[in-house]
Amino acid sequence: MSESSRRHLDEILLEYGVKVEKYLQRREYLFSLLSSSSPGQRVQGGGFVSSVERTAEGICEDRQLKVIMRFLEPISNAIAALDWQQRQIIESQYVIGMDREAIMREMGISQSNYFREKRRAMDAIGHRIFGQYM
Image (cartoon, rainbow, N blue to C red; front, side):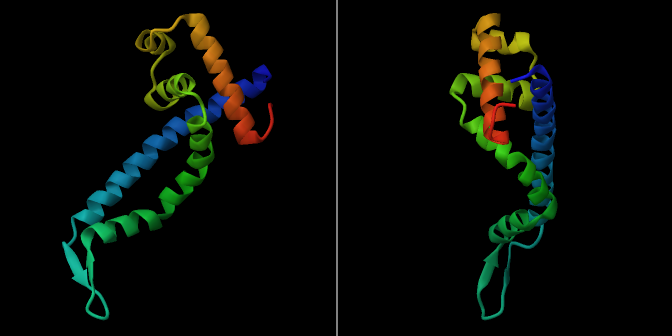
């Protein structure tokens, strides 16, 4: 992968971390709105819809969440396909926001191992998202 492609993918992964946070915040906001309403309600035909069902339906139908998920899904799938060490490096850096030193310390790996695994992870994510090595 070229250096410019790696920088572009780095920017995409940084945005991924931001979108994950927005997704979680929006979901929590919707949950609080929907769960604060009445415990259940009767529907036509005498059935009963619980607040849990209304909450789940409201979250699934939220437009903002759908837009965020369209961005997150292909990247999440690419990250999920990585081996555990590569996935931990990517998630720690881009989702949690840890720096390289903290990641290496927590994982107990050397700097050369960190860079090798991160490069492999970036290559795999780029290949999976864009269908080719950039």
